[in-house]
Length: 502
Image 1 (cartoon, rainbow, N blue to C red):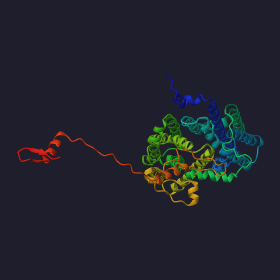
Image 2 (image 1 turned 30 degrees about the vertical axis):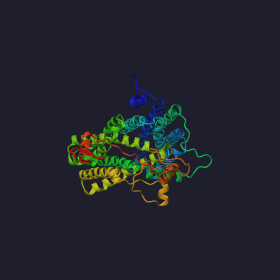
Image 3 (image 1 turned 45 degrees about the vertical axis):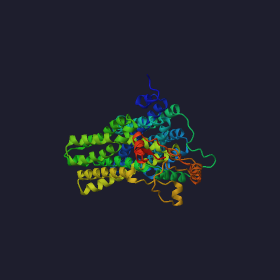
Image 4 (image 1 turned 120 degrees about the horizontal axis):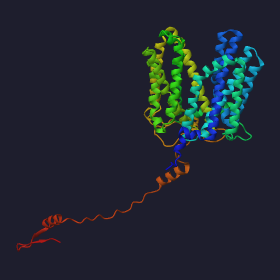
């Protein structure tokens, strides 16, 4: 018998049967592959023109600036505009700008400025892509679809630069940039053909609030949604400590007496493990993913610390692969974050999470490099891995009922009124109401007592209770008790006989 609960559609085959998801998935792969190819081609073009390693490295560094500088601000567009149209517009804009770089032969500083604009369009594209994925695959299907998308990202990261180097060496930098523009155009065409048109998440009518106000509302949703800060901290810690290991791959290979080829293997080990881990976790049930969340989070830091403790090349590769496998818990974190946030605030929360990841990874790379100047790379890896594992345990405890000790998070209205945090746990979610649309930005988790319910309860308490007379309890004595009673209540009548009184 075929299952009727839709369980067949939650696997990878069932997800790919969805025509809309298939188009969105292929468009995302094309867009990311083109981005990797374009960065490599532009870096090669800049280096050929200037012979400057610093400017060539700046080409890759530019890709991190938009997410760090304007991540939450630009991601707000994914909640204000129709997401399908936003995806198409971002692809078209990136394709046009890339074609200008390829055909216009601009100066180096102009080319870097155009690349910066291209990367700015990538920020709202990423937020809208994940937000619309939750609309295409609601419920349990989102976890499987998001795992597939995340796996494709790891594969593109591993193979993108290798393919980019081969293409640039074969046809040159400028034709490679034109090929990048073509990938953006194909991505936009797939979105037009396969993705269904949907209205904007928050219809505002004639009155449209300021973009900064919407951005601030998204940050307040992050603050006031129960469990969301804990999920974001866990999402921050794992990729950050793994980025430390990737950033120190070359110095670690030098300390082990190996060359740059071994460093390349070290760099490819973690993404390879992540691709496998994401696929494995994506097939698990929600209960299973919840059970492995904390162990896998701690395991990432433990594997990174083991890389510094055991300086054997084959073991280092195995430990990095295991660290990547443990990164599969990110699929569950992303699915849970999307599940606890309402559709109207999904883009802003996703943008904030992406910004948090990029800032954390950039800071970890810089700090690890500075500390490695004074100490060895192995020492930095051991300290960062242990610190990350301890931090995961602390965050998990503080986010648990034992850590909160019954404290209930306050809503926006309670914070504004200065109400103290209740010590008595109450049932029901903490809802955040949008000041612009009046809609709840936090998904409801259960029934909430209304004002009419409270008034009825108070009237019931105030009604006088009438005492009903209790019925007279009669009990039939047993034969032994009857005999004892007769024996106690008899006396002699003078003739030797004993008669009962009464």
